[in-house]
Length: 136
Image (cartoon, helix red, strand yellow):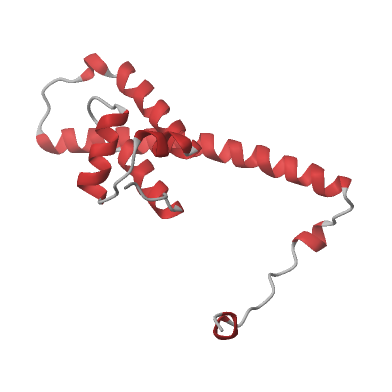
């Protein structure tokens, strides 16, 4: 039975997607999640998470555009090239995520202003809770 994906699981799966160097399909991703991360999940559960779906589509597009690019290189250069590609794709994905978060922040800012919520009210620290008394 597939478990619900926690934020940490989503982060690890997105990292796995960024490291894909071959045929990226939902089925391959599901099997790699099980083999490399120990996460049993389904294609539907993965595609329901926007971060995973966006990272998947971005990486798939990048893999398609890089198809005829491979040629012989010494191993150390090959590893450096793979790392550079992985970091470039991760950077592109993070820029997209940041853009979405900025759009969300602007939407929140607008809605807060409509309801008379000030910046000082929003910046107030969270209340302290006593974890021992919460468990009883």
